[in-house]
Figure 1 (cartoon, rainbow, N blue to C red):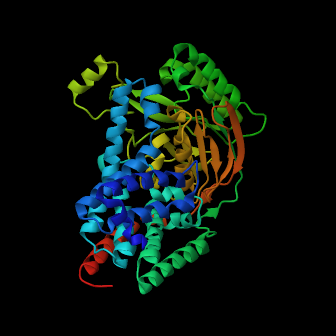
Figure 2 (tube, rainbow, N blue to C red):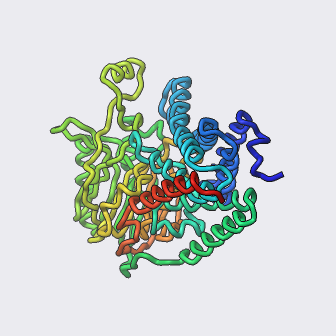
Figure 3 (tube, helix red, strand yellow):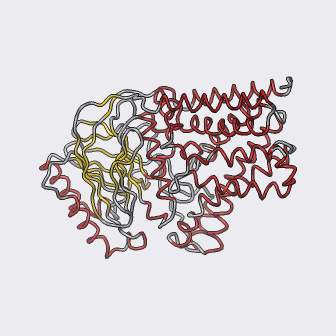
Length: 503
């Protein structure tokens, strides 16, 4: 019996359970598991389940797949909300479930659109409409209601040959190619003779093309050795903001930054200094003077307060000869800001919930500088929004991401976060210097490979010599607009021909 009859075997209701399991299985393609080769298989299973479904049934099956994917892939949200955030357990669980449902709705949308606007048992559905529809749904998820691009399929291919097209089309382009392979697999196992040949041809074409691009170099080494130190304090989140912890924290970071060897740049994590600048003014002045004396630049995470506009800002402070500030632009909803009416905010205060908002920095900010090298900075979660960082390029020659992954605890989230950083390095053809409070602190080369790292939850530092890179990748020039426009055309064209032609 053909695998095309999978939906007949499962039935409309049981098919949702199959989809739920398939979605959960897809998580193993991402870090820390790293089984990137498995990614097309759950997606092919999903497409087979859609074959005999109505648009409404396909939406529910897609929704179940999304629930499996995001429940298994983002369960660590409960750790952030309850164990470290202090939320009442039922409320933390409710918020997590609402979040998973919202994310799964994009997979439901993809299911409805693919089945509604293409014909079953058609290579046009398998190879055009499905890959483009899924990738477009991911793109929508990346910006609707501020966006959450975490768990985009393309990230799972960071270190595979499919990731070689990252400098060309970014994460959504890699998603499209991965889903295209899933469609090719369905054609091979469920189609007639010429459909199977078409599917096999597509698979061979994708593998040959991406393998050929695997060692392509899109940017140029400037030939300058740049000496860096990444510092990881490993301060537990529950102790980080205690008043009695401030002195030991500052002493630890300063001690870990002392070096007998010349350094061009030292990087501390997000909010490494757990105080406002005016509260540690003397410390900052002495640190600045020390950096000037050593001819070293220091980037340090700190929360700042704008008295004129009455707002807090998540800041990366540059100390040394080339002073500067970068303010985090893309904030975490319900983590760093609360898009709720004032009366809801008052209720949150009454039940001892976090309610104070941080303000976003300007969309257009200049790079920071270290010994004349322009650096593209990002803070924590905003590294997931690659297109928003393109304004730094081609000027910026290095990437720096500072984070506080202590909020995730000992879960899969820090590994997923690191993988996103790896993808950004590959996308831009630059070294990525990633520093976090509890890990994973790492140096990532322009090919997206980790060259050095510090173990999680251990205080320490990492010294490395990296090279600034210049030039532009095609993705820097066109951003997401080129791949997204192509997917829209494939979606529209595939749908139109699918409904009017027979295979």
